[in-house]
Amino acid sequence: MTRTHHVVRIVVATLVVCALAAPAAAQNYSVQKPRRQFITVSYDWMNTEALHFAEHPLEDLVGRPVASAQNERYEYRTRDEAIQIDVVEFRTRNRGLSATVYPFGLSSGTALGFRGALEELPVIQIDFAGVGAPPVYSLTGARAYDAGVGLFIADRSPGWGLGSMAFIVAGAGRIKADGREGSRLFAEGGGGLSVGPLGVQLAVKFAWNKMNDPVPHRFLTIPITLRGTFSF
Image 1: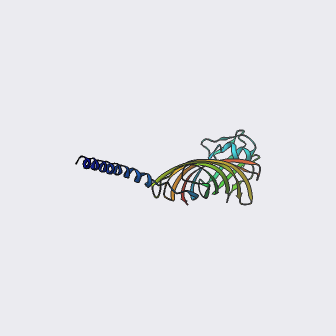
Image 2: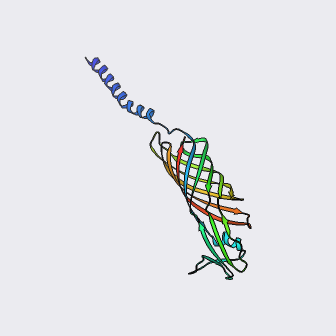
Image 3: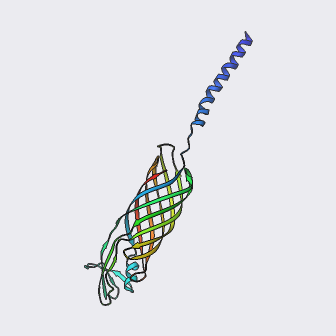
């Protein structure tokens, strides 16, 4: 009888150990890693702001220091008051497309990415009046073709779980406008959320744009971008 009780105790202990181990084993095997993504395509809505507009491009175009005007029908004037400058148009809302390739895949953690983008640049119309004023300046139909490399940090969930990411990208691009060409350098940073292959991102981009016609000049654009993405 004692031996039987001993055997029963061993069997019961074994069953208890197996019962406790089963959930842990099931938990280990049920953990899923998010599937790697290799390409992200996006449609971009941009609200572009200009910074240091008096210095670039206005001073570049008139060839002398420029200051903002107060309570006048024009926005700027040269400091010698010889030329009045009226910014007729600076279109802030623009659109774009972009694609990012992750050569080693993007899952969770840090990944290398290469981004190419096609972006509209603001339409800029400037009138000049006064002694020695340059002709009307017009930048229309301008698009930037950018290529950059960056780091992407993701915390993705498997399946349709909620994930997040952050990124920083830097690179260069070419500008093509109506009858003119230029170049630019840029740096962009941002982050976003994703659910499965779908996502939304918010980014800020600093771009130095350089044109050579009618005279060499530069202007700084800062588009704040809302980006809808699809990754696979």
